Image (cartoon, rainbow, N blue to C red):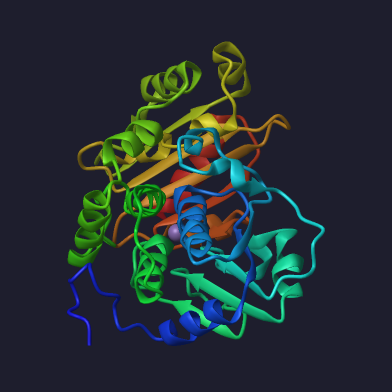
Length: 328
Ligand SMILES: [Mn+2]
């Protein structure tokens, strides 16, 4: 029995022995992460694959949506492929996916293997494959991969450590989110000891915004308004803002979080205008609010504390409708 917070021994996880057996049973292995990949998707897949290669496995790495620019610093990103025609794999592994649909077109390749493994910390009913290394209480898929590599006896090289720390760090928002546990920190420490650099990851992810994205954030902050009690904070950007700053939709990431960071704010409402003129709405809340039900009133969905929907413009009218629903 491993000591829970000892990062040098794998946690005694359900499915770990089966996962080890699956790896030993296969030589040709295909890995795939989810569409629109993030730091944990790419980091956990690369870290796992590098470990498998060290065991002499032949590994194909699939990311159907390629590589986000801000993850290009990771080791071995040149190994990533968006597609393969091969169907001779003995083991197919989906990582960080949530469900098969989120693997996009790589799902068919994964399912073509006689043995399929699901490694994930999203456990909401989309599990797949005969072998499942799943734990919803773990902050990142990278931490599950770390345990599996330890169980396989793989040496954690600086390259593997960097890939896995990228997953741990991004899925915890830099060790800030509520999913950060003592072992998350312990594993992070072990990865740094193995040669990973949190500074390199932090700068690539959090200090790498485009000029246009920062200008767009400034425009949104300038337009920010709030309710009399300060609990509801909102802002928006329109198509002419994107044009003025040469910014794109991806550059709005983080604006809702910046709105919610206002002292006393409990719900942040951020609207961005689509090329069609429709306003896409992001709602970010704290307990005890339920913004999923508000989004649902406008045909949207999501979670209790993070949801989204679309409304017709202009932004002032959309805001008024959302405020009415929130205060009803
Ligand atoms: Mn993840």
